[in-house]
Length: 598
Ligand SMILES: Cc1cc2nc3c(=O)[nH]c(=O)nc-3n(C[C@H](O)[C@H](O)[C@H](O)COP(=O)(O)OP(=O)(O)OC[C@H]3O[C@@H](n4cnc5c(N)ncnc54)[C@H](O)[C@@H]3O)c2cc1C
Image (cartoon, rainbow, N blue to C red):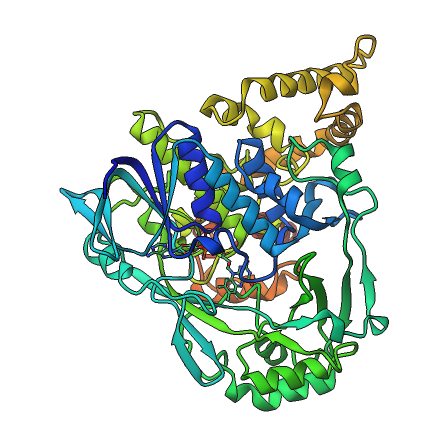
């Protein structure tokens, strides 16, 4: 093929789109290759963006000049701040989206982007010379040269769909899998691949649902957009929010599932790979929590122009007829007609221990990996990595230092640090509990943390940055009570005085706690060599989750430092263990003093 590119991005999912937009916006001639241009940035599971910790990441991508937040604002059909009854540190924006509109808007962003070409084809192999990638080969046998390649192949590499006892190839239902590329990633780029799996839920026709038996879950009265650049008032005026609904499984549902779990592709071991523990199938939930007689099912619209609704909580690999029975046992869904059935999918991923923090592979120069291929799950996790990979591929070509985000400045930094230093043994998703500095990395201050970076990369325009600087100065004025010459809403737009006052209030409320948190984080670092007895009884610490106890009892780390590197152990767990060890030490000392004195 003609035309030499500086960057080729393989895959146009959430990671690929952010990567291609970042590199082309930073001035590099970029080509994005994808299997099907009609499914660019499609959401194969719930069409919802954001949520706990994920919402913070979308705000971070937006603050640095990424696309996901802006598209969500324009494709969202319901906006909510989750955890709003708790402290601002864990407030997390979430939007239910119109699935088709999201994909259309993202495709348009790609099509309108200068320096970016789009090609529908299958990438079959990498071209690697002297340990450096220098292009790709596509299905027709043609080669396309490039200085660097970003691979974002999601669930497509040797994708295999499982439905009850049935198995067939597919990257998603009704989409072909990429069957050749894995071989090249292993043989040409030296990457070791593993298998993970994930499941999705059935979709039913809204006209067949009896909503009178469910509880309405409306959007927020004063919805907030994701993007710092969305003009709030006019956006709110144009937004027509749709409601979600809540219903529950019941003992009949559990009996149908329990009696037939041997027929599911989840339980019978035909899918040997690990699925996300945090997104379990209904089969796994019923087996794991036999004492529970019901589970939440959120009934969520998939778009303005479709009758399809998503049954959030019914992830399943049961055969079609049993899915139908299970659904019809639930209040309000007695007559529900299924349009699409749930299924499980298994795919190749590459251990993220094989990439550096810039997301470049250690085995092959100029080859970057981002998204689900790195063992993560979720649109936001994928988009975050895609953005960073797109930036870093560019910085490398330009001979500049990579962008390495720190744990104390962003969730994206935590995600990349976690996966590249600890690896993954199941699909990784983000949680607020993974953040030791969560009081200071909130969704409301993503701009204050990261917009300087976005501007220095050239991804935030000078015009937008000037507005941001005015907003930041206004925050200082408000903080210092210097209110005589405050900027007006008009000057500040799309920021506003209301936002600025809210931000200063949060800052003042948290000031003291943030200091304490910093000290605690430093203490954790200092406690690296603190010994943990080999027979330490983790069961005595009630505030540790049973999963944490299980992992630590299995591995039995000998120091706090070792414990902190155990997979899925969170900084908050380490803080709890450290405090407990200190308490035990004090008690021992006191006891020995008492014995000594008696
Ligand atoms: C059935 C199912 C259930 C899921 N359930 C959940 C869930 O419960 N929770 C959750 O958080 N996430 C879930 N996900 C995962 C979520 O969809 C992904 O995390 C997210 O889409 C990953 O983004 P990505 O950009 O890495 O890959 P994807 O969105 O998968 O995009 C990959 C892109 O690469 C392209 N591609 C692949 N191979 C090639 C090739 N060789 N040549 C050219 N193009 C190629 C594809 O066409 C596609 O455009 C689910 C996914 C599926 C399929």
